[in-house]
Length: 125
Image 1 (cartoon, rainbow, N blue to C red):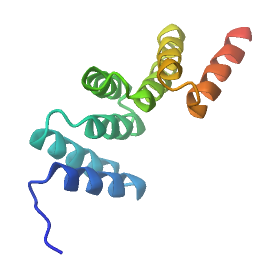
Image 2 (cartoon, rainbow, N blue to C red; image 1 turned 90 degrees about the vertical axis):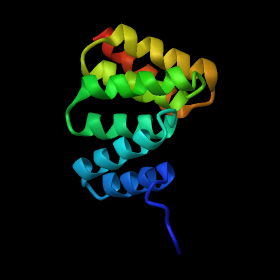
Image 3 (cartoon, one colour; image 1 turned 90 degrees about the horizontal axis):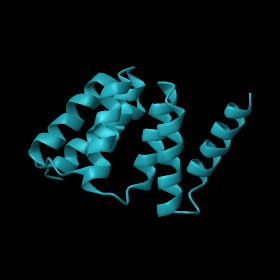
């Protein structure tokens, strides 16, 4: 099989595989390469955000998630990831707003519904 090294999708897929195998630094490199080739690649922003969050750079992850939802306002899974990042920073108001946005887009999205319930429980404590 012939692969194109300038393919944004190829770099995204490599990044996903590397991230899954715990090679976050290398995954970040490939996600950034995918974005250099296609700066409107929503999945690459989302996955880069996940990798940055996993590496402890929550602010940079939030920046990537915000770029993804700016490009695709219907990216409900990205709103969920954004909520988790905001909650990690202690900004429960923004986390709740992101989860509500995710559920507005997809009312059946279980992860956002579950995370919203967790936020509600935390606010009662």
